[in-house]
Image (cartoon, rainbow, N blue to C red; front, top):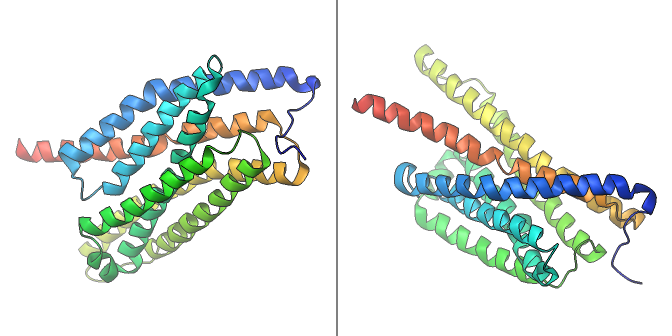
Length: 273
């Protein structure tokens, strides 16, 4: 049986055209605005906040730069079909690289809140470099593996959906555990307790936003993939919606980082003055 899935019938071709146009616009926005934003985040991490503190965030931004370039390649594929292989190769950065580094960030937060002694033991940069090296090797393997899949095939759907389910499960486990720990009341004197509760509320809001962001990114892809596997029908409009959610949600993390980084920098400058 031919593994390539057929598109929907001509009766839905008009709506597919609208959704495809929306996906093209989002890809253009992702390339034009996402590229400078992520380069700015990397510059802030290297020059201001410190690589050791935000090493995983730096790697996520590198993956996002690859996703921005892939958006450009996706647009060029309409005129140069030979670029499809390169597009499939770079998809591994968003499908495997970004969620794996986000998993490392979630595990780091989980250890810092639930197991602080273990967190201090593995806090040095060398452990983060070792973990990141392993992730980049896995990501490279995923990129090479993706080259052998044609877009919108059953094999590609199995490959991507399985990863999404695994990564999302790890992230949700870590985030739920952290949120439960953060909601517990602190101990000690009243002033210290108020300070701890304020920090916990801020962490709760940030983690809640990240959880919603991950759901927006991964759940549409997972549901669409499982739907295609079960029904053997490829509804192109669903894929376009997934692409829109995947690309737009990628702006949440750098915007949050820039928001907190700018507040920290402004606080440091005010103390100097």
